[in-house]
Image (cartoon, rainbow, N blue to C red):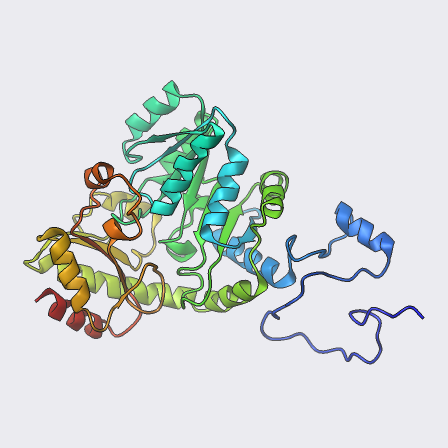
Length: 393
């Protein structure tokens, strides 16, 4: 006797009212009522799920939620993919948009992993050009001289120097020269900045950071408004290379997103207080934070960011040894190579996130041995300041 599918037909399985929370669907595959239905789902005639690597209800819910946040207040739709990590998201997009002989135009003050990935694409015959993307005339000269540029890849605010780039101007330039603008929005989140609003073609996230917000999982996301680009270019790579995120991480992100707006407000408030304190401290040579009045890109910040965010960096006078002493004396803040948690996190870029970057390049773009990066949490700001003060003293 043929066993009925308990997912659909077994009368012993009760039906329930909808769950208040998005359910965590822990399944590697999904059941078809008939072979014909399976064929229709494979062909895309009928919507449905097939296999965990192709998608999952929890995973799709997270992708849709992130896309909705990035597209909030804009006309039209945006579409998302939930990935196994931020690096998987970046690799999927760059692999899809860049062909041998083409060029990626990007910045030097870039997350070390992203920079290493772009450099590695030379093995596929894809070149990298590095420039100050705030120098619009210089960018246009490169685009005019290098028609092979297919992607302008941007972090704004940048990691770890918090430089901010005018996305609307860059998007107009990119489109004039038939290139696409790809923006890593991890630092800002869609609460503080919406790159799609300013003309970006693709937005990327390491959801490990602020979108999850609690340091409990690793995942990434891709968002764009061009459905054909997503479905015909990114999805095949996403599936074939195994870049799909898992339902557990998606469920954690969905729960984190519920408090994202509140958290980003507190992150920003606390970071402003910390930046102002460090700015006045005699042992601090320089502070990089978008909320300071003398930030070199303050006009851009005011134009495209609604919050200044929770990330900052500062340079100590005594170089590497001074940075070591400061970080080893911390008691309340946490030394760890990540960001975006509810706790205040501290990292030394030169020896951690950016250790693979050539020293000369690092120094030329402000990533010195004395530079310390802070991801300011949502704790009582007085507790953060007391810890920083005793570590600096």
